[in-house]
Image (cartoon, rainbow, N blue to C red):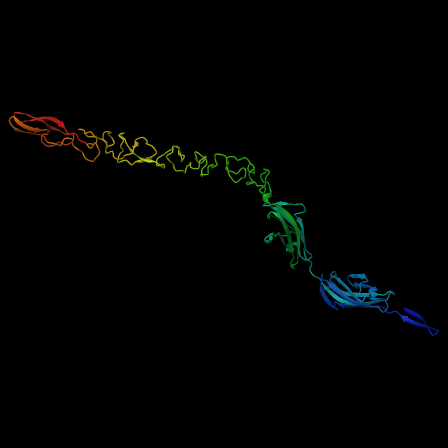
Length: 444
């Protein structure tokens, strides 16, 4: 291109011819022969210049002999520096060209060679189940399913991990083996709540891909299992029993029907007085804590221990009563007493000093001498431990004719209790001979 310039100088016409030079272009970065990996971001830096057109007005183009035009725009600064970044170069040996065109269509170029090494592709994973809108229930199996693929590895060589992220971190709950079509599925239970699912596939090169979703697993506490209109979160204390729920009617069935924490209250099975026994357990008065099967019987006219009889033996406040068979008011000294609230049958005496309880005349209160034994061969009627004879004196009759003296008593030795012998009851006044009768010895 030739330019002609006419100048007027000193009245003379002067003609000057100027030739247009094409722009210059060069690539500084990356260096020629650079090797990079597929997908790596590469920053290209170049420079352009033109003797007539400002650098920022030059039409600049970056091209690759493999990928074609990379960018096509006015993209250089006034200083002439041009930049371009890409991570999309196809694997292979590229000749990258920076070209600049001026307003007259002149073109300048700079180029480098760069090698892009192919990097194995990562596998892919897509969630099939749970799909949008699907939910599950806690403690129930749900079928989790993914679709996986890889450019290099067949599905059976891929490792699939199904996990959820909770307070304890990432928890794997299943690692299903993909089938020939890349479908991997398993049935599993995971905790209730809105769970953050993270499903990952890893290939033989260690490359992986993760798909995530938020999945609602309804907690058991939010499910009305028994259909009574209440869940555990609503206060149902037994969500397997339709007859147990807040406000239910309490019946005698061993269950907390109204969910107030008490069982069978208001029924015979309920311990109303808090003594540890209900009416069903044998509490004969479930309104009084002092009355129950474990209560101590007292002498109060009440069946305190619920054995069917009030004021039983050994009750608190009892008195020892002794066995008084003959009813003389004195109990046997040989039979053990009973501690009773009142006399009972033959246990009716407060004394234990009856020496023979088969004869009411024999007792410590006896005062009468008897010439017969009391029934066991003994004449100890007053229970003093001895058989006391009533007549112990020996009689006499003595003196001269017509002058006699005498005293009443036994004629000879004193006989034993109950024995009969001669008793001097007088004296013949002429001969002074004994006058006798037969007498039986009484004792006490």
